[in-house]
Length: 421
Ligand code: SF4
Image 1 (cartoon, rainbow, N blue to C red):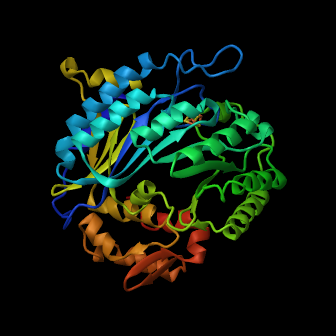
Image 2 (cartoon, rainbow, N blue to C red; image 1 turned 120 degrees about the vertical axis):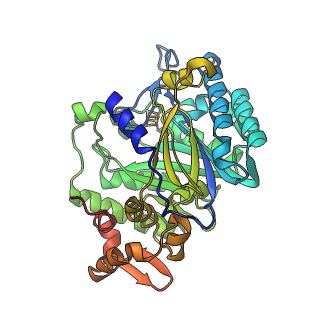
Image 3 (cartoon, helix red, strand yellow; image 1 turned 45 degrees about the horizontal axis):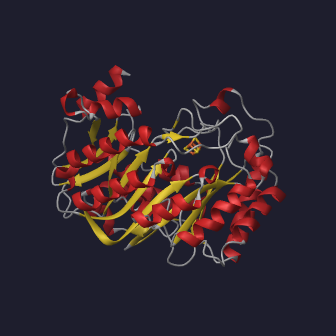
């Protein structure tokens, strides 16, 4: 670990004069909250089980989260203050409070954090402010209080409406809590997303169909965005050591994808990204900015950021462990709370295409020069090869994955990797 940090620090000293952006891209703010009631066995996010939130009868006790979050919110504000020089004068268009389970934070502390964001940054008047939440710790009064702090979009980690599915993947909530939280959320927040997972252990087509039907039941009431993720077994998770039984095979996964596309298109949802579907005008502005190779300031334990300026493009990452992160933000600690890496010109074809080709519509080709500061000649040869293989649609003004490229997106993205010796 010490060696890898040292390597990142050394790389951070290298800037690349060739990268000259005519103007910086749009900017978002990502805030990471690292705690959950219980760690899900499939989860590889930077999330940590908070002590004493789950009672012996399986209920969630949110009474004592002040002592957990108060020092963390102070650390976040300190982190934000220390980051201002890197984004000085720029408008912030979106805020995304993710985790972990940010909704465990007491609403008055969330208000303190968002007040600090508004007073320190130039937050657009119509900024999208999203918060993630878990149906297992949903209380109507708390969520009304979150809405009063300015959160105007809720992203609810439903994953399924089936008790059996939820139990098999180790979630803390059941199907009735998924329904209760979603029903309340769309009454409280102007915009609501739910996360659903397909390809879960033991899930069949009928079960997925029931989940989709349950979700679509809320469309008339205001549900306008869905994130559909494929369930996968990730390294360093409980499921990586103890694999769940009855994982779906490739044929079933393909049938599930077809079921999702046909059901949701019929209900007026457009798939605009690999995992994201929205009704007209309801795309997630914050995530769109990632995929359009925009900038984002990332604060909080383990948060990643990308910042462009007259010196080039940096990727930043905060200390991952919440205690070490908070400790490093005590002024007298003398410790660095983040590391950074300047992107080299040879990194940028893959970095740019990895993101923008996730968008079904692709992007205008002039964004390459605007958002990387490099001439189009840098990736012309790679793009031409992808076109000749039928993976990329290219016209004088636009790039997008072809139908074939959409099916084999990893191969298309990999064609923009720099040659390794
Ligand atoms: S609730 Fe979400 S972030 Fe927390 S452990 Fe489960 S999957 Fe991970």
